[in-house]
Figure (tube, helix red, strand yellow):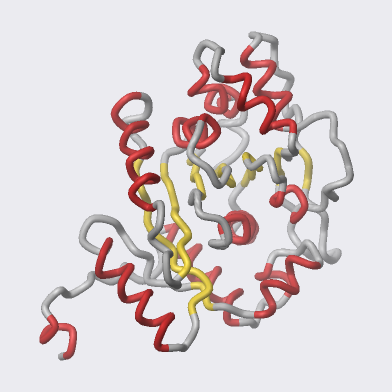
Length: 279
């Protein structure tokens, strides 16, 4: 099972939307997918059909508690299926979250093996799925450390807007720390530009991100454009690629998934030489 963490501690970057659409798109390709909501806000759980007011008894927090207190885990414990948007729509398995996860994070500080609790939780599912997609908490702390410790790859959604790179160095430092101390096999798969627009400002900041990180990190060729259909799909708790498959954002998420699978276009390499870029 390949585990991909979708991470950015800056809110509003399209992190959860990316996690959900990637999970559904991989399912459409025939892969067995498990999504993990590792954000106490529970936005991915809402996307998958769990309303905020529904106080589930079995969530990712209960799995973490069992691991922390060395209690046995049962097969497929806490795994739910996303709701169908229609009879032909694919469903994806997911482990939900809610605000109890935030309280548990505070308690984790005194626990043994606190950095690898999630990794231990997910080991029981490794033979049942091809991909695990983790929607990370938008903060730097033990939840992020656990997600990075459990992951093989990290994808960083980033808006092409002013201050989009704020906090990026803190995130990459966290990733480097986990690589050195806990998970040497972890690597950054790439930066995904989201909510791009055909404006000079958006194009300027998209170019700025590629210029700043294109030599050290992969920046996916595919960009996710701003589209009102994304907001509409969120309101209906549906993935964009199913809600409006012909929209520009839906097509972009399908192309992005192909890049993740290694079937898409090669990533762009930023040319620092202005003349080379103008040719």
